[in-house]
Structures are given as structure tokens and as C-alpha cells.
Picture 1: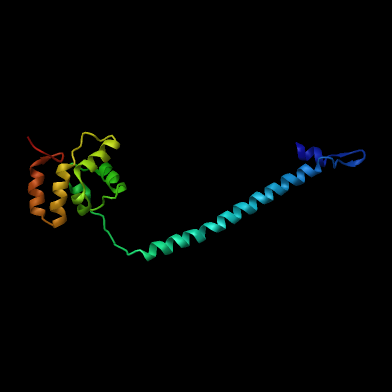
Picture 2: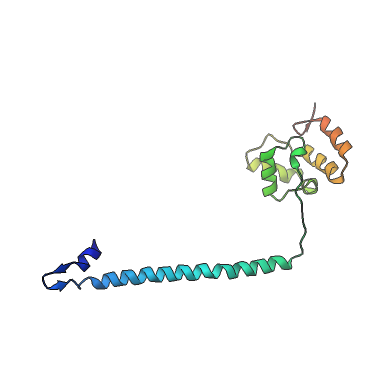
Length: 146
């Protein structure tokens, strides 16, 4: 509306009283475009610095194990454990039951007991699959049968 009023021609010619507001608005728009372009062009440099810092760290390739093999752990629990940095049998074997239980409690999974999981993970991390399967026969839902 304002632009139409500014550009409207009257009997004496174009209305230039409010033309300066249009120019200021246009200048602010151009400035916003330039600032956006500048800030977007700065990010790749920061990413390169972060990548260089990451590359300087010694790399340890860790292949995630299928934690669902452990009696009592399902896909939802695996996602929760992975977010906490527990991705392998070795990671779970070294975890403390109390810490894993706090993680489960925080996610609303209070009914689960990670103690049996850790015992299974210790056997799986060693590659003792016979002992792993024997232990699983003694468990129900990751807990020892009563």
C-alpha cells in the first residue's frame, strides 16, 4: 500500500514525500541479503577447521554390534544405548549396571534390569557364544528365571 501511495502520481507529478521510506526499506532488505550471504559463506571455513581438528585425533573405528542379540534388549533400547555411546558388546560389558539403569529410568523404561545384559555382553565380547547361549536359556527378559 505504501509503495503504491509513494509511486502514485498526482496532478503535480510523482509523490516524492514518502519515497525516502521506500529507499530505506530497500536498503535494509539488500543489507539483510548481504549479511545472510556473508554469514552463510563463513560456515564452511568453520566446518573445515572442525574437520581438520577431527582428523588430527587418532581414529578408532568401532563397528556397532547387534545388541538386540542380548536377551531383554529390543530396538528401542538399542537406540537409547547407542545415543549414550554404548554401541558394542564391549561397551555394554564395561558399563555399570547403575549407570545403565539411570539411563533407562530417564527414558521411562524402569521395568528393565540391565544386570543380565552386562553379563551377556561380557560373554559376547569375549566371543564365548556357547556360554552366551547357556546364559540366555537361564534368562527371561534379561533377568534370571526364578
